Length: 387
View 1 (spheres, rainbow, N blue to C red):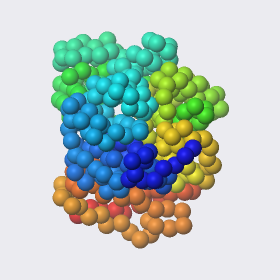
View 2: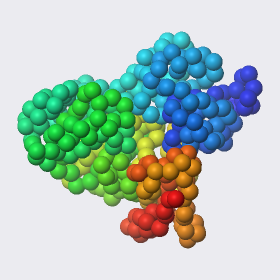
View 3: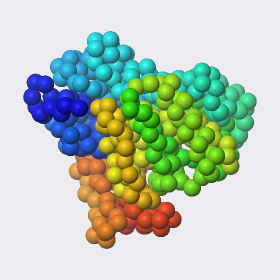
View 4: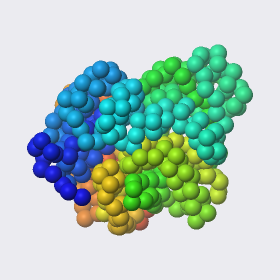
């Protein structure tokens, strides 16, 4: 591959549509290869804005605004990093000859839980939990009765657990309906899923381009209200279950096509593997790869986008803990103990300009035997506090 010089007319450019903490790491990896980075988000000074060559704050759900910026910058690759983007703008950009990662149709299918679930269950025939889609409170009440309790209720378009809840009985439905309105995206339609009595859940990071498909070691994680609080790699699982997960992950990513890394989520019960969701970009639980792999998920994503080989080595097992703000603050500060920075641990601070209660502001990363790493990553998070 020929690498260009940044800020020149022939520079290879990556445009991030969404510039949070995951986009920031993608931007850093792209910069390491001399790739010009344009970071876009809905607010100023988003994490990736801080390390990009240029940054913009626009309404990414405004098709005209997105297309105008794409035409102005003329990026080589467009990387959607969040769900709240005008899909029509991505299709239009693709029609105008721009390269959307992995491709506009894949983004369309995966940004909406309805599209990806129907694609997985009906087109690919994958094993999933029972599900229905609803648009009204009455429809939700009726669907939950058919699905049975407990059931999981999510907006079809959202991220980081926003708007998600578990209804344990019919008395919880009205509350779940209200919670769904907190979606980061579109709450006009909800998916009602049967609660899978799983042993554990995993993310299987799957990177693909013309050189082939590569799987990272499975990542285990604990979620609270749909957002991860702890992840670790590798997740101990049977060879049978892991091979089944890989087959499913390759099937769905081949079906979507394109380049990039995909975060494929599964529920696992003994050796039975249920497809859950998929993100066509780096996954929040995959931040653990910042310490466990020679090429993190972010580096693999950039390599996949550029068409480079996807080889890497594993340094060892590790864990990642998420620190969430406890206060509403402008220009927040984080107090982190010096002991968090050791031979096998460190902290990544995102630099978000505002903190809101429950907003992810940093992660702890520890390289150690899995259980010890999980305990230490959690301990570090508990020692951090925000002002």
